[in-house]
Length: 386
Ligand SMILES: Cc1ncc(COP(=O)(O)O)c(C=O)c1O
Image (cartoon, rainbow, N blue to C red; front, top):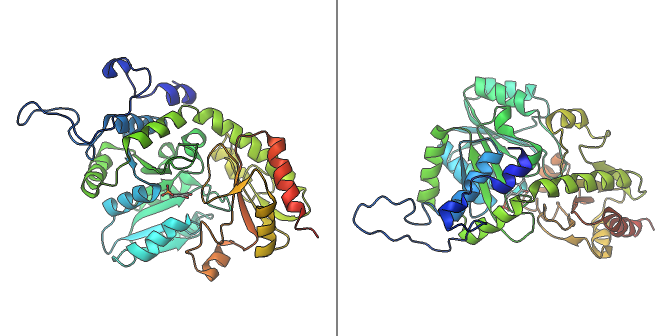
């Protein structure tokens, strides 16, 4: 089956569910047993739940992995992965422009618990060689395209280097979705999604989904999930399953609209620089063409010429349709002020090193009519020109 078909039909057999055409919401914590020791497929929803199972199997299928795990938020999913595969004394190498919440988790929690955290610019894969020569690395954590500057890293090259050194490779694939990129096919061991974003697609669920490449990796992660218990609820799983049915359609529309908006932003006098890997001007345009041939996603980031909080605020206040909100990946267009929102916990000098200026705005381009999106954004940008 091709992607769009799998997204609708994978992992669900209506014969197993009273012929309900769509997966039912098993909104219950327990399943009845008839006698001591009876083997039944589901016993307690922290361990497993039929609605969650359909979702986990569907995402595992879309990511070409052995097993999937759905958590109560993206951060709960990342945390479960790191706690499963890292121990005090281990070293994790993470991309320098990692998502702000993951950066905080590594610095505020993992470093305190004795994990050696190394952030590295992996845009040049040779940088990983130097680190692997200096440290015994347990895990390499990638994120591509990254948040918010949409930098790409070369997944197959980095994964090959990490594997040769005996490290596990995990990747945050949230911005790409399995429609645009399948990292397990490129040498990664673990792929993670904040399903809160595109997998759900409608801004009404918090969830993280992890897919592992092998059954051997699945077992310890399953144990961590069951023991620590941050599982996704059945209703949320149902909503994300419903979202996934239109993932291919939505991603095509997001990519098309985002490319068009990025091109128009390049011509706007209030904009100093546009970051979108589908633009020839982007530093990783060539890599994007190879690694993400279907498209590069729905997020477009700009530096305003007037690099001030006032100018950023003026754009935000003067848009009518495009609202400011913390997240991305829904059908509606949104704007995020990363300096004070997604990366608020990151110290100023680190933000500066990451390129997160006060006049940076990250747009999550939705699937509305592209002319309406442009009108709203360009009118608001005009207000910074005075
Ligand atoms: C790239 C990326 N990874 C992880 C997360 C964390 O996911 P959640 O907010 O669902 O916990 C986010 C959330 O913004 C994100 O953008």
